[in-house]
Length: 264
Image (cartoon, rainbow, N blue to C red):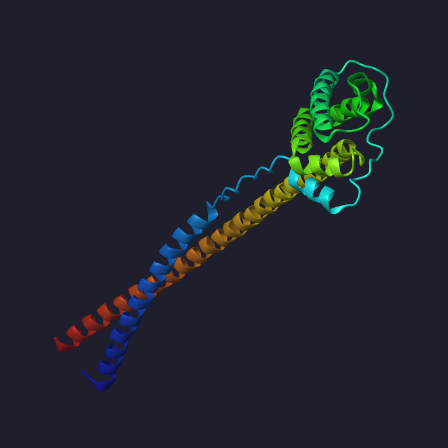
């Protein structure tokens, strides 16, 4: 056997080894990309964290009492309610009447504890536009939760020893009752606005996360398609190299047959 033939056979063996290694890598790449492509293409959006619930509106009694103590005069009364509306059937009207009666009991006890020189009688309290019309209009606007909060607030404020001391020091002047009602109304408005803002931010958060998840899944699906194309290409490379290996094997067999024929 000539030196040239030996060199050719050596190169053919090396070529086969390299070709087998490349074929193995191409086959593995095709399998991996197919699996990855299928996984990415079937990706689904992850569940978004559910919307949190905003805390119920709450008015702080202590903040009102501290404000009352820090001022020379209690909070001034402001126009607390719009002009009276024409009478009409409304379930809040009965609630307003009930709360007005309870407010009178709190206020009457407050007057007695303060020894107010000029006490307001029950008839005058119950028939006055403020708080009768104010209660009705407020409750129609804000509902029973506001009514319950206001009732608790007024009861707590008018029974507080510090508030009673302020009343005694000022000899019943200062409008603590109307100031407390107005304070509660303002704080409630702020609390309701905070709840609305909280819910709006939660809705925006959920929409943003859902859109982000949709974009992520779409990108994953596109990546899956690319992976499948890559797998197809890798498989094509594998088949091409396999054909080369087959041709190389044929060439080796033909060379071996030729050598055997020469020897014979």
